Length: 133
Image (cartoon, rainbow, N blue to C red; front, side):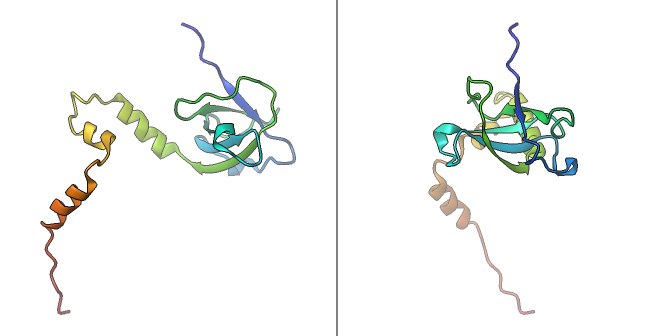
């Protein structure tokens, strides 16, 4: 089996925050330009609890199907976002489900194509009650 590539970002010493500010599964938005245009931007999450105290490097994993850029030693612009541990755990659980074992999973993954029809049928079953309190 070929090894999967590992990706690291290195935070410059001046930009590094206290270690208590970082967490495992923090989302990072990385870009080759300050404009953060969609073609030059990737979203990753951290696989470590923060940058190494030795060299300020941190391993990250790309979210979605896009990988990172092929060149290694590029300067990047980065924005640290929220922690995504809960969301990543839910996605991991969903990936392990089979539509055959859990038929309703197709409805969740497909989304609502007929949202107006679903809203109309649901609203016809809603009854409101006035309160005299």
